[in-house]
Amino acid sequence: MTDLLSPMLLPETSWVRRSAHRLWLAAEGRRLLRFAQASRMEGGFGALGRDGSLPRDAQPDGILTARMVHAFSMATLQGIPGCLPLVQHGVAALLGPLHDKDHGGWFETPSAPNNRKQAYLHAFVALAGSSATLLGVEGGEKLLSLATEILETHYWSEEEGVMRESFARDWSDEEDYRGANANMHSTEACLALADITGNDEWLKRAHRIVHRFVHEIAGPHDYCMPEHFNRDWVLLRDYNKDKPTDSLRPYGMTPGHFAEWAHLTVKVEAALLRRDGVAPGWMLHDSRALLDSALRYGWAADGKPGMIYTIDWDHKPHVTVRAHWVQAEAVTAAVNLLKRTGSPAYETWYRKLWDYIAEALIDHEHGGWRNEVDADGHISGEVYADKADLYHAFQATVAPILPLSPCLTLALRESDIV
Image 1 (cartoon, one colour):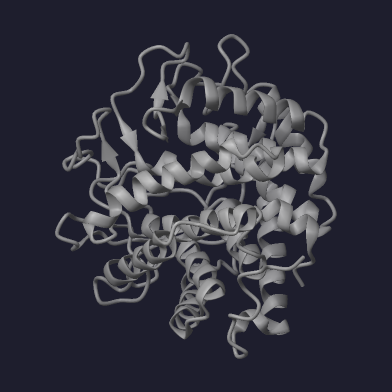
Image 2 (cartoon, rainbow, N blue to C red; image 1 turned 180 degrees about the vertical axis):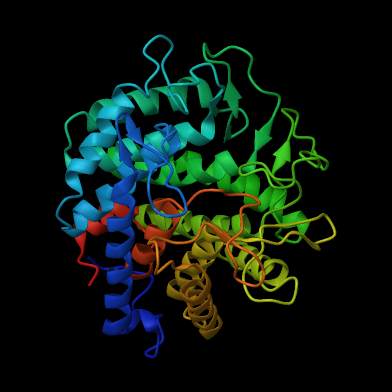
């Protein structure tokens, strides 16, 4: 397939043009896939321990299972043997023990059925459903239909142009909260849903989410993304001040999310250009500004390499561990903006970030990536105790050589990445 935005903009010396780099990305992707297969368990997929094995008390995890369906779907589309059965296993789990047959929606884990139903989880289930549907996996269309119905019935707020956050199991007791993280992953899901279903409403929703959070909220904050609001859109500056290492809603601001919003914004722009030939002019500007802020405030903020986890409201380092997903999303943002603009600065960052990942995060002893390390590159467990899952790292090996639009799975079906 032809990416109308990228090929002529990539510098001739870009790593992305080099066959050796593409082969390295492919090899790293295969290594990650082999490692992640161990997370398969009865009822879905579970979190691996630091040694790469399932702990005895491992539980099937709804978020991980949905992510694995998506990741192994991408691998199946690449033609990697052994991945389709893992997609089938995950879909069966999402239609089986992880699905709430009484009230609809999905459990984070079947052992805690009364946990709140989070938009974050349901965005990944919708993404998994879109990926499985594209593959033609049995149950994929059913999963997609159930997930889109839940998003439209309970989570999407037409008035606000965002996703609501969470509910009790029976969909009562809506949480007094609006969050950037769940809406960020909902943007990714909406882009995939638009491409796989052909329903442009999902692209319109992705556009509205990005407009609200990126253009209206991050812009006036020096393109640093405030994440926590109540339902009246009052910024909660002290939210989780006593839980600074929360894995989904940490105190302060998260530079890795600035980068993630950056590459999603340019993907929304590309989807609009692909559909209509026009997109709002602010999208490219805001995407570049987001990544600039992510790197300015997140990279080596304490004087040592790596993107830190959070900053405070004065843009000073707060939680300084280097989470694997932060580096992966920064890589993806750098390469997406490189493809979009051809700017050599993004090539420099793309190489620097991969060099850091190769040195500090790739685990050659136990496999996969270390989930987080400290400033000196030692394994840390302040935020994430277990091994990194497949989702962020594997996508970082796939995204560099695919167009900005359509979504990754559809792009993989239409092209060969090596």
